[in-house]
Amino acid sequence: MPLLARTVLAPLTIEVRAGVLNNLAEVLSDRRISAGGDVAVVVGPGLGEEIAAAVAPQLRRCDIVSITGGTVDAAQELGGKLRSRSYDAVVGIGGGKTIDTVKYAASQHGLPMVAVATSLAHDGIASPVSTLERDGASYSYGVHTPYAVLVDLAFVRRSPAQLTRSGVGDALSNLCATADWELAHHARGEPVDGLAMALSRTGAEAVLSHGGSTSDEDFLATLANALVLGGVAMAVAGTSLPCSGGCHEVGHAITELFPGTGSHGELVGLGALFCTYLRETRLKDAPTSPSVSVRALHAALRRHGLPTTPEDLRLSAEQFARAVERAPQTRPGRYTILEHLDLPYPEIRAAVDEFIAFIGGMGAED
Image (cartoon, rainbow, N blue to C red; front, side, top):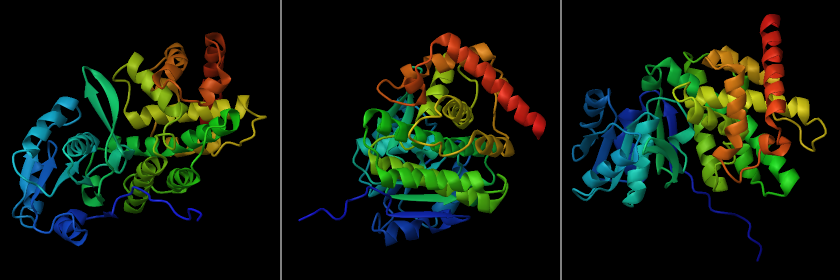
């Protein structure tokens, strides 16, 4: 008998709206995650008292745990606290570092995890990946997909603008990642998951075409949905390929060579713009067409105040070129436009100079 369907590891529920935190107990009960509210509610720095005030009346049997997340050590320390009593689930409320830390600890201890995002810095909200620091370096760990994902836009509106801009860059970079995945399929026969591809592109294209700003609630909802779709796309594919291509290789290389240069979304957004430029100018006879044009991607990044040249990140052309040269080493075995072209450094440097001149020309046109 032919297989007519497949099981997709996706959250049981996804809610994106202002005030959704006020319905946390209802979500836990309706989805049979926790009927009695025996959960650990983990919060990051800054919002602990306010979140406790919103959650405690709903979940009178919960424990509220405050952490400073982002590291493997923090996740292991949290794991020790989760062993202190029997919980139905653990709820992580906060930004990306908090949620990634809780996802890791919950997976290590076999607990259902609910993610409640109060900012939109990257697509880790619903992804099966936690990015944590260990011994001064950043590593990605496979974790369970959250059982439920809630995005409270009331908190998102109050989060620092830089975090939201980072989320925009991360979402838009999916257009580069999916183009790289398609290139790997045609050049090397690597399998492509059409559902994961569609999920990733759909969210990114919605952000690309939305005319609103990061202060617009409708745009924030569109961005939140795009980041959630990116996370689900990775869960569907069983790999980060729908959301991570040459764009992320460049971003990781900049972080390694020039730490503190910019946020994750700023770096991968610029990486996506450069890789898209390479695709348009040096891959004209490829069997695939770009999923986004340089001009369209540049317009979206610029509209939201994201970097579009190395100078915007206080990097010289030489430094950016060195990062592009280093980029393929950050993800060994991955095949993107960078590996496909395999340019020697002098050609990389020439391409960077051309790219900067081209982007500068578009700025002059504006």
